[in-house]
Image (cartoon, rainbow, N blue to C red; front, side, top):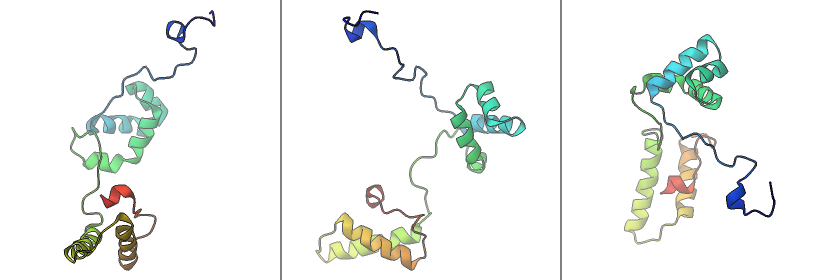
Length: 136
């Protein structure tokens, strides 16, 4: 191919984007794939149901959650409710008290308080990461 041809006309020799559409699967289908993977292996199950092996492996790890989920549920996004409910409540009380006193509240102050509360409640540091997403 002529190298003087504009890129738009000649294309690329390496595929830069996945040509397959992004798919979402419900819990029922995921359990079906996992059951097949139990009898064979993740790779064979992925080929049979035309999903990526990575998806099959991930679903296999989430098997218990998928079994207990509603069969039409497609994703587990967002915070898990009631995981750190007492923790969140104590930090929220602290924030409200400081705001009621007219004191400024920054994310840094919230993070420091969160780390203190986590230590008081014996929450392992690996389980709680006081990220910007958490502080919102």
